[in-house]
Structures are given as structure tokens and as C-alpha cells.
Image (cartoon, rainbow, N blue to C red; front, side, top):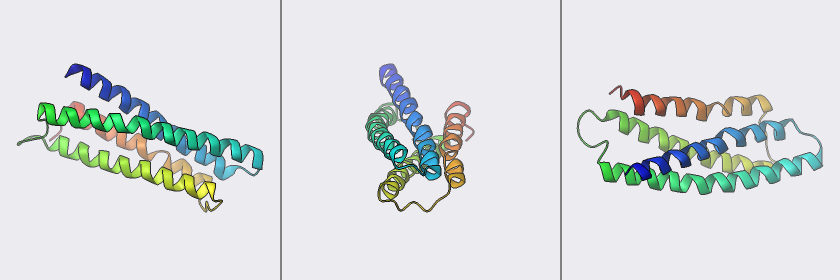
Length: 140
């Protein structure tokens, strides 16, 4: 199970790298006026979204394997696991929202400012902080 845990952590880190970087591309797209630069940023965003989706799948699979293999989260005193899983569901929603925002940029329908995207970019940082605290400290 240590191999599964190690792979889970590696894929989570890799997925988060994409969750941190894609909204930064959105900030630049929201500020951009030149067509050539926008096309290059859109290409980068498309490739990154596909790549981070491929990283999210094994992260979730290895996480489920750990959950089912160890039986973590079952029984009293494991509220931290339920809270963590709730945040993971929110992260999947954030990932999906990134895909929706990318489609809007591709269609030229973005109506949000670069300042909004700067705040949007902070969401996965807060979620990662919460998950790490839940997993390490296990407050409940």
C-alpha cells in the first residue's frame, strides 16, 4: 500500500501544479489584447487542461484504492476523511469550472476581469491547505 500512497501523492502534486497554473494563464488571457499572444495562451491552456485531467484520473483512482484498501474514514473519529473527501469533490468542481472558463475564452465570451481570475487562482491553494491540515492534524 505504500506504493499506492506514493503514487497518489505524486499524481496529486502534479494535478495541483496544473490547478495552480491554468488560472494564471486565464489572468494573462483576460489582460491580453494581441491575437497572436492570445492564440498561444489558448493553446497552452488547452494542452495544460488535457494534461491535468490525465493527472487527476490516477490521483482519484489511487485515492479510492487507499480509501477502500485501508478502510480509512469508516467508523467514529474519522470526520477528517469525510471533510477531505468533500473538499476533493469541490476540487473536481473547480477543475470542471476551469474547463468551462477555457471554453468561454476559446469562444471569445470571457466577461471576467483579470482581477477576478487572480482571486479564482487562490481557491486551490486554500483547498490544498485545508486538505493537508485535515490529513496531518486529523482535527476531528
